[in-house]
Amino acid sequence: MSDLYVAAGGGGDPVGTLIAARAIGGDRAGPPLIATYAWERPEVDPTAALLGAGDFEGLVREAAADGGGFGAFTPATRVRPPAGSTMPGLARDLPARLLLLDPAAGLAALARQIASMAAAAGGRIHVVDVGGDVLTHGDEPALCSPFGDALTLAACRLTGVPTTVHVSGPGLDGEIEERTLLERLATRRPLVPDRDAVAAAARALAWHPSEASALWAAAVLGARGTVRTVRSSAIRLTDASPGLYPLPLETAVGHNPVARTLVEERPATLRAAADVSHRLTGIHGLASEHPGTPRRNPPAGGTPPPDRDRAVKSLREAAGGADHITLRYAARALGLTWRDIPALRTVLGSHTPLLRLT
Image (cartoon, rainbow, N blue to C red; front, side):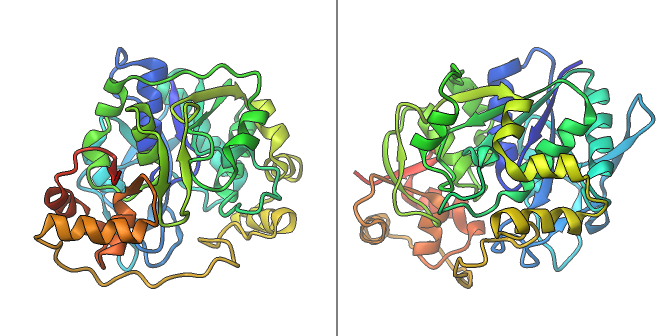
């Protein structure tokens, strides 16, 4: 038996959550259960939708001791076009059982689903948020996607299952500044994963376009300095970046006005829950990005350049003086897509989560 680990925001959070699970529980109990939304960036999923069970073929139905059930991904799971998803690939490459959080039926149904997952795990719940926007106050200037995290907090609160929230890599998602988050985490002593925890996620990190999880993994491995990402020109890796900061669920909910209001109002539908986010933060929960954030059309993709020196020169120019860049940013800067990341790594001779430029 093990605990349930919940990747708070979807996207690449299961990668960071696997690292956190190895740091918290080790591998003594076997592969951890990781629950996650299937919610991706538009470059991965052109629909940019919060996908549910009906959007996949080949989900395995898992039964829980409490009579509930939920879907689990396998490498054979397929997303129904035109949607896209990295979840089957993560099910193949993460040493974990990857479970689908499907909030389509609303907050109360999501809470029952998480309770069933926790019962199947036989333990408590660990919510993992890479970056820290789970502790948003709703008014931070760079805040982009608070809804998924708030929905997770509210649903876990309604389960009644003992829950700890963990913030990994404060500030690394570019939404709330590290300094602000460390003030909110002032009394928390962080756990720092070891290199083996990162190694457990290495196969997924080799191709997944997640930037926040890659930044955290790189920080654990010792990277420091500025990083150019798709969303930010100046994410900084510091000595606080490798930390995994635990706090009680009630404390996290107390910071997050959307989560508090969801618990108080208990909206009956997902749309109504998203409206709460819009009312309190100005960011509609089911929009893929902040309404004020300009969207770029993703590149059409192509063949990675065969000349490493020429590619590195181009990337240094694009990085604007940053010490590192993410592989997702490198691919975009060279006119490639996230699917070209493995081939680009080969050309660049890169075997670490970030590409060092200085």
